Length: 82
Image 1 (cartoon, rainbow, N blue to C red):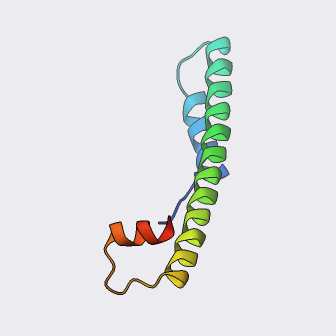
Image 2 (cartoon, one colour; image 1 turned 135 degrees about the horizontal axis):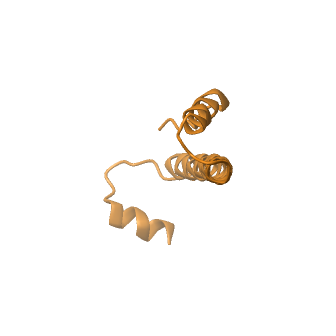
């Protein structure tokens, strides 16, 4: 699974479009701030998700190495691990 955040360039393009909207100064500043905050939060969450997926992949690889899936059902595998 490939995760892709938006680039700074894409983010800047969004801000340019927002700046072109017919908003008064305060509205534009507030919207700009909200977009920047949302971008930072999105980028942070995407990084955390990628880290979690990486951890799961390492655990899955370790389990596959220790318990090769021969003929075991998932239930039998879970019983062996427990």
